[in-house]
Length: 112
Image 1 (cartoon, rainbow, N blue to C red):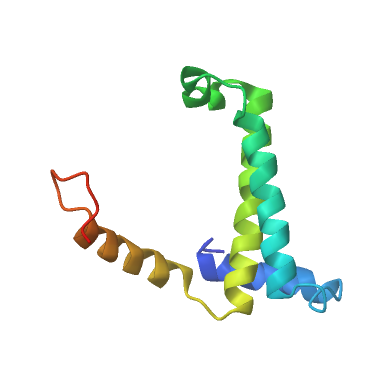
Image 2: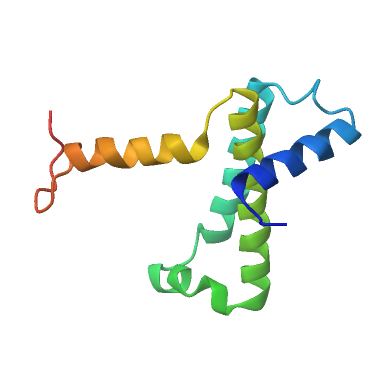
């Protein structure tokens, strides 16, 4: 398995289909679940100092939890994009292009 974003999308499709979850995986429900998972990831970092957060992966227990929550976030994001027929990689690169124009090198202010 090449472990591409498409492979992940397809694995998530199979996982949901095997459990008959497509009925529940509506865009609204997926956005709400994604928000909840981002909240759980936020909770892991909420009271850390900037230095502790930068070194989070050095703590084995915290690192495991961070990976687990990041996986949940990615799963729901990929599933949502799939349901909405959005190519995440294409959208992400398009956003970089827009931000390149909005935030030129050396100028930290947005272009109006």
